[in-house]
Picture 1: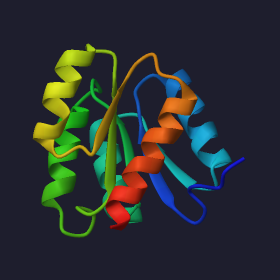
Picture 2: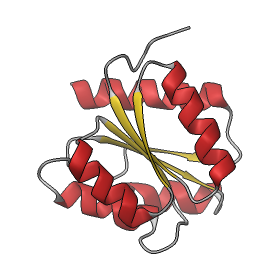
Picture 3: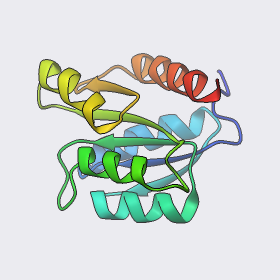
Picture 4: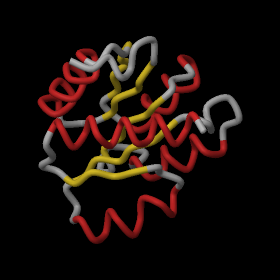
Length: 130
């Protein structure tokens, strides 16, 4: 298995604990250290404290939405260079149109395949390394 994220730090945020556990387990299998959050505020605060390489954010979360977290990340000097992938079940078209407006690098619609998640992570990491 690829160690795509060896030495990288990732903040994963989702209010659905099953999805959070699934994504966290997969990200760890790729070699990353994972910091979990179950709402938008926690994701942003943990991101500022941990300065991750990548954020994987659910859109619909209590408090700050994933989009609001995304905008806050892009406005925060210490973490604005991190990659951001949005995950959501709100509908492919809406996600495709809205996520880039808030500064996301990529988006995936739920339900998603772990291979698609891995491919998206690889693309965002490569894009952010340029």
